[in-house]
Image 1 (cartoon, helix red, strand yellow):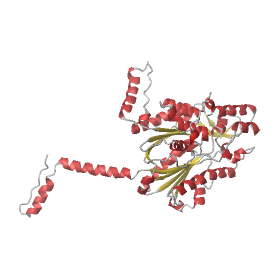
Image 2: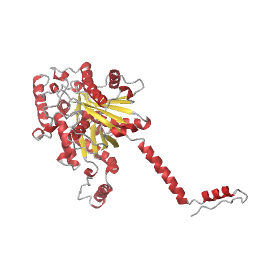
Image 3: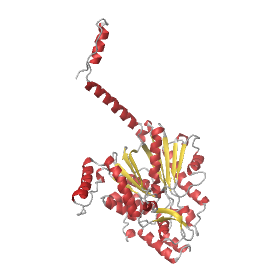
Image 4: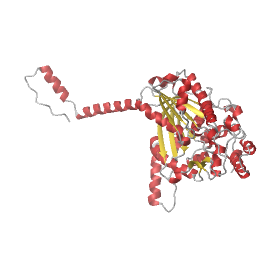
Length: 459
């Protein structure tokens, strides 16, 4: 349809009259096409400006003298009764954690030194080394860091951990620093989420994320079994992650953040108390792990997947999932047919499942329909480094890189659980050809892995 012409004064100059006639001869289709192109171009550049590049990351590798035979330690320290010792020994034998995992020097002592001073020493030992490593590797001046975020749940000193880092490395006075505490093992992905949002506002910025948990103040000397579990699972570790939205960093980036989905089940009382720090009957403070923890984690994961699935799964898998729900609710409620579990291997090449424990890894591998190799990075990280809390998913990604399995174009799903109760997912796409020979936390003995952990995992 041609737009109606306006009345043109015949006395107008011929050139002007012809121009007006030409402009008015455009069809509605032309106008719609032009508008669509402008909208698509604006959308493209708005999304492009929000790209989050993962330039590199570094995981802490404790020296060999930090290793500890936990079974012997529990028996020698004379701080537990016989029943508590037997319980912790049994858990250690079933945990899937090997003899290479480490704890700070302060816990090697008998009795352990859980003072604030020793806690700060552990934090400095873990973070100073990995920060130095990542800044030196990429020749980055600390004053070029625009955003600094740290997360450590139980230890929240004054001045903060970020202040400790700023003082040590001489960050500039207007660096935007944030210190997250009390957010559990999923705090690492929460830190990434915070940086993602900050980079939307602060263009052309470089961000450093520090993710760890201090083991020193977490030692529990009481008798409550649900609190004794933490003594047997948590180990020393940490990660430093360098992120950017600067165009010049695109060529050196390893990954691009594609999706980040956070789920918080805290409105449910059972979820809220599933991981809970409190004093026991004798006044000993500890973190209690509920017997319902696996069920709570499963529920949080299902809620998280309901949001993540449509973002990453092909339409065929989404259709099968939706159809299975309809079929179960309407036509076959009595038959109890299972709801179709989407095939996430069609969306991801790799999986990094938080090392909350052997049972957590095995249950998730089973529920997500994954094969043994898909859970290998998680099992091997648990075996060598133990549960390093919020940094565990980075040790797993480090394992995949050291094995040479991460290829350009591959997508990896990081799944983390934490107190509250939270389930958080981060999806990264590899955008570089990675060299498996580059030094990292696994380089010294990656050739020895995977190992058989079946003997350590017997119920």
